Image (cartoon, rainbow, N blue to C red; front, side, top):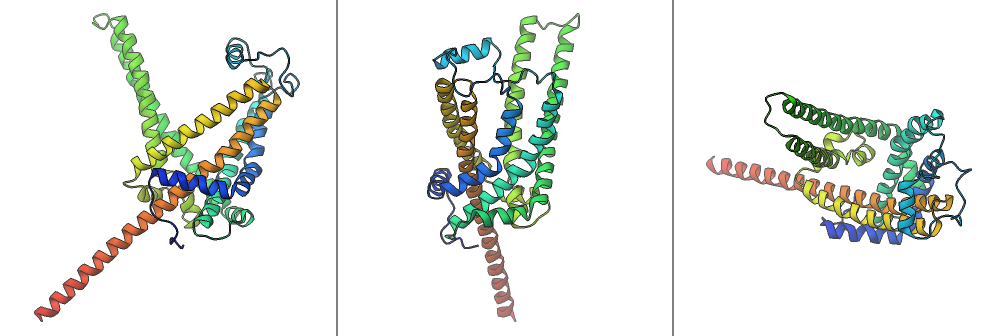
Length: 333
């Protein structure tokens, strides 16, 4: 790979580069996400929406302000939700057992892989071809799906372990508080429970974020290096870069939340809880997700460059040490 046009970058430089790439190749990145992820997102909305009771555009009876709309959504059931979801278990099972797995195991990895290939082409000055990138990603579809499944199992296992540990601690605290000779007052017990809940949330977020970041670059390894899982390789290349990556993804999440939340709120005010509003929200997701994937791709290319540079530097040091030792032995002879 030619890295002549790509140098190690900080958080700000990575974000600037991602905006530039997305702006110059917007059509291809957006169409890729729209074609692969758009149908999955749209199908989820359809399965969870009663199309007969939801207007195409905002109805005259709906509130006209944002706060009134949200007040009604909190007080009254959302008409956009399918009233028969509880009765019609088939729709729920179809969503959970078919649409969600297809999205997480196939559509999302394929989209991310093709975006990575297109981003790499843009970085190296090559011609960006959505068709070629998608074809190469499809050639690795089963390894990508399998590694994504294993990655999901690992993260889910960590979350389950953390939850069980905190449940054991919480039950122990409650048990100690309910014994007859306990000096713990009810108010103190409530304080412990609230503090434990907050600690649980913080711990789950921090621990899961750590492993998601350290293992999360498995997909480029599976795609480009043809490794089995890629999790071990991801752990190696992210060593010493966790806090930089955490800061990058924190900023990216804030930007995504601001844009996504703002546009969603605006669509609610203008179109209410209508079909058009939901279509706009799906479209917004398809607009923002390519940028996030470009950031991910640039992060991997940056990590690989840093890691390979470290390997080369270490190799040169070993060669220099070996040469010095050889010269020293020659002088003694």
